[in-house]
Length: 70
Image 1 (spheres, helix red, strand yellow):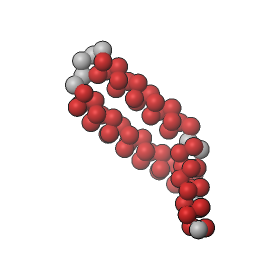
Image 2: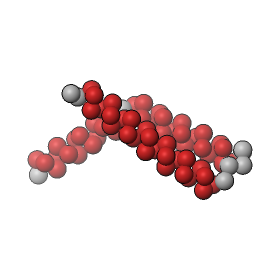
Image 3: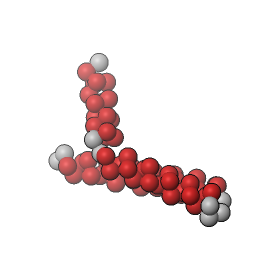
Image 4: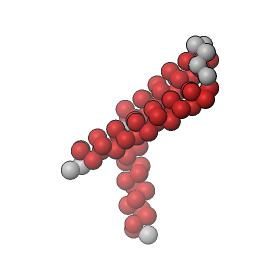
């Protein structure tokens, strides 16, 4: 049970502690949405860009968290 509690705390700290991650993800969604709706970007390409953006931002956030907690 302690393992589960520790794991959940670490996950919470990873996402809630990083306000930049939330801001950047919301910005990414807004930019891609505008590109699809108003600039005529194909939705499948928008989805691919969202996936790449999410993975990039998440990787950067994890790396920053690791550097901070060394």
